[in-house]
Image (cartoon, rainbow, N blue to C red; front, side, top):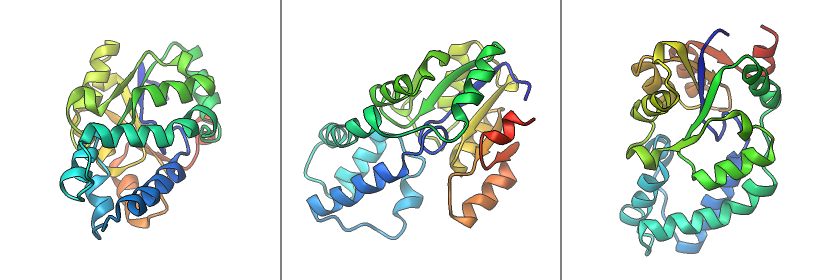
Length: 214
């Protein structure tokens, strides 16, 4: 790899946190007796947390304000991010290898900034990141390239010299539309998504060891 800057997504791309949110979804569905539509995953994948909270309040009927919903989610996830979730294998080594080369790096996530920083500080890689930016800050989800463009701007990097690491098709496609090269990290078990990621991304990896060997 030969890039001046890297923009990393967090969940599914750097940390294996899928089960945390699956458990929260199940608990939340039971707590509020929610009826989840068949197209739920397709509708929410690219959303930021504020967009998702609005969806839960207005579409699924949770009797709370979006801000109250987000506060509940963060409270439910807090301990897991501060003490339990781990980096994907070899992500630590890859990040530090790039940092040692002077590559500028940051996080662009739909997740909460405080949870993100707490997890990555514990895991020993926050020191390599210049900042965390999330979808709420830019006012849109990852179906838009805006979060990646803003991240590159803050780093003083041009999209043509920057690669975006993502694990969802909407993120890969949006970053590509913003002028970035992309690396799809295989964190999905859905063959349809895998096919899209392989087709749309500049490169596709099943693990960070592949990059360390290049």
